[in-house]
Image (cartoon, rainbow, N blue to C red; front, top):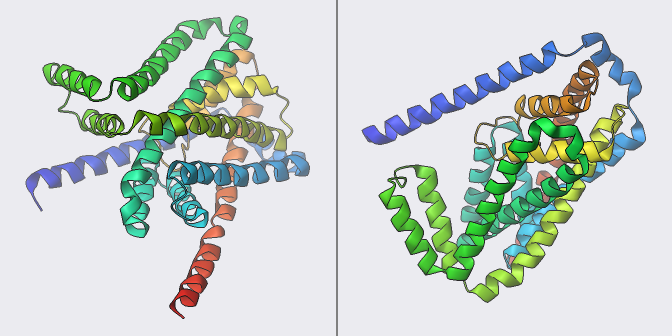
Length: 336
């Protein structure tokens, strides 16, 4: 093992330790805002209709994301295989780390569908662009509807809308101008000496891949991609709302949408472990604070929702042995 590789592994290990420590500190913060008596009392407040609704919606989200990838890949891989990869990706992301989940997505496609790897990578990028456009639209509409109540956040909202809009505009510039834009961007990054950073280098690889695609191909699937992302984001908001209502927490859907747009943005930060443990709860606790909601009750509900989230993910994992059984059976039939 080379010295540079040893340093890279060491820095990666240290970074992961820091992320875990951050998650634990934030969990401690949320617990400090919680009335433990109220937390245990939530068992008596569980609404079974909302509980079942929340679990069903999470299954629907998994199916939707798998279908989005299935469509973007061009339906050249069986839906059951794509669903298997998405279930594994979600499990790794939610029980370990987001980065590990993304790595598992690419690793599984490389192993199971080597000839489809480049298309799978492009599908992942397009899905993320669609999600980013959905977040921007949800933030724009939700912020407008609650604008008078969030005057402290006005500057932050303007900055976020501008930054996300700039990223979306960069994507479309890469599609429209193709190689000219990529060449210009490469020159700019070289002069600013930003290409030293790994994330910038990976971003340029994505831009290069987009520039090599036919415009007609990109625009043909981008419309459906955005539609999938909007549906997925809508179901996500209803799922989160159902989670809060499961524990009889009185809240309006509009507030849920506004607050969870911020949570979606936080999920893009490379600091999450265990499905955003601590970070998601702290973000929601902070932003909901602008709406004068009872903090102790909210903190208790968020902790209960975290437990429910992990249990629901375990239920989704039941698909993996089912897929293995079907896949093995089909393989034996093909051999015969």
